Image 1 (cartoon, rainbow, N blue to C red):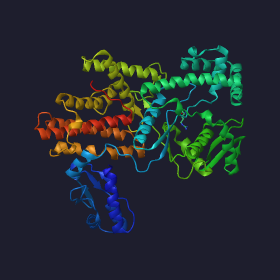
Image 2 (cartoon, rainbow, N blue to C red):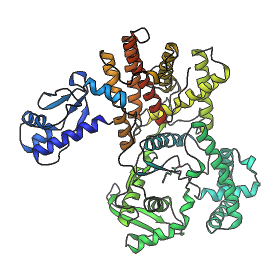
Image 3 (cartoon, rainbow, N blue to C red):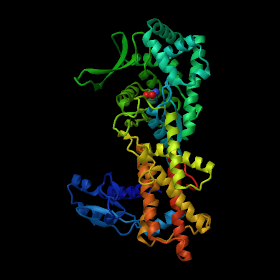
Image 4 (tube, helix red, strand yellow):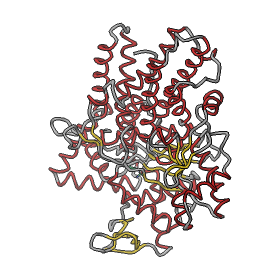
Length: 567
Ligand code: ARG
């Protein structure tokens, strides 16, 4: 149950009844304990607009609002806030009988475009954020009951492929020799830069490829297969839910591109400019006020990244019938997407009801504050990064629990190492740059994967020590102590947080919540004896433990972070 949404609904109904119009109630979690659990912040702005007295309006609203099943008799605070304190009965009932996560009453079809690497090269850390954040959102939206359509919009069609295929032809490299794609790319690039004849042949190859020449196609397919297999191996290691079936590559839109340009032309949106075809929209101007074009066809007839994205919008909106399309790329593509969305709307490529949302993220930096690279200044390969994560986690786990048998230790190290890398990314505000710091992400203190994974195992161990199975416990906890209440209030907020992440695409809110929940649990654990308490109290507290463990595990699961039995 989403308590905040419920309170909002009730207060908005009362406000509308009093004022005769719909105004936002703005119910927020209270910032401080003395303000209760939630605070209604919408009264003052509403009163101001009506030129009324906020306290008087608050009183009128309170006289009408029906909330006594949820909260204690409310207080009006300061100039006109309403402070709300959840009833203990309501907390106990919700924890006792409500599912951890209810599915939405309004399921949507949601396309999530994520990972989407360029297949000319091996995946590198630049693709980590899109892959990890996108996968968490896809999992979370599906858990809320939406139909999630994953789209791995891999780049498999740029001019770079001309160079790679020409080199492939020249060297006759087989699949095994292609295995090191990074190396292969570098060698091809060197040939391209050094030898004008090679460069010319590369350009011809692109044309032949795009014209459907059988030989070029066959070589291209071989290359793409190797590159996609690299990606899939990374997804599998990361525990990312993308599969080959989710690949819908740039090349899949080839046949639609001419029509996209023709359609823009028919609608009078296209303008010829220096031989290229462009769309100019009034809302996009450069610094000095000159119009910024969206180029959809080059003078040599070639199409661009933007053209493909317009075709993708149309496919997703019309064919996939998406209600929402989320794009996970770094913030440098913000202008590109604003332009694509605007052109797509203008041209009717997107249904008016389809919401197109770019969810940008910042760069990944090293601890020196510079873009994350190897000591030699090269891009870090994902596969190597994950090797290092597991190796570091193995040392950590070995130090923490030397008794763990070898194979279990490796499994735990994998969960902790991979979990740490993913969680470090997810727990930072997506919009900011973030510093990739091994020591921070692998710490057992603070808002980290190991801390939360460890908290889960501690709860499991309470049940092991007490020889209790959670199913045998009474469903409704008693909530008497302060620490019990604080834990219960957080437990009840889970649904609200998950729904907010679904709306804003900000998994760090869920991470912050899970961290807060586990610290509240630790305080409860210290303040309230569990296994040594009298039978009734013991069972009730174990119930709180079980709900906390379930919430942590489910929450981490939604983020794509594995948990373990012990560590
Ligand atoms: N391949 C692009 C890149 O590596 C990302 C594609 C994102 N999705 C899209 N529909 N443009 O930057």
